[in-house]
Length: 128
Image 1 (cartoon, helix red, strand yellow):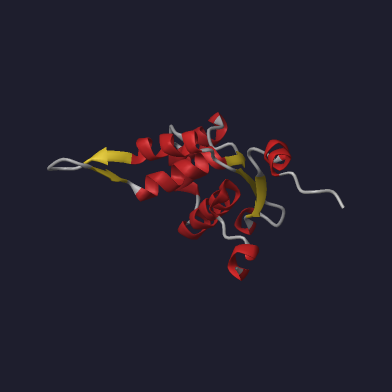
Image 2: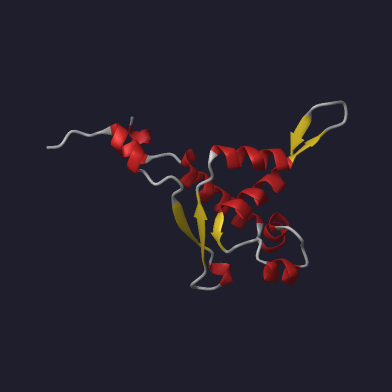
């Protein structure tokens, strides 16, 4: 039996894995495709959703942050598609997300993006 090579596994692993998420409200065949976000992308989204607060300091707008995660982490649909933006009467992808998705759908997609980004819990981790 061949010995496991962790270095080779690191080199061979898919860098930005993807996952299909069924969204039946949009039709029986509706499937959103999400992908992993890397640390640079995540930090950028945090910065975009952060605003200054009175008295100093900063706070993150959680709703905006979630919408930004979906706008960046969705491969399909493309939330920045000009036809979609125009049809919804918005100018940014995260506004389109907020306008079109229900709260539970937002949670579902954010969870899927977090999962493929490595924040999910593996069943093997639970056994140990």
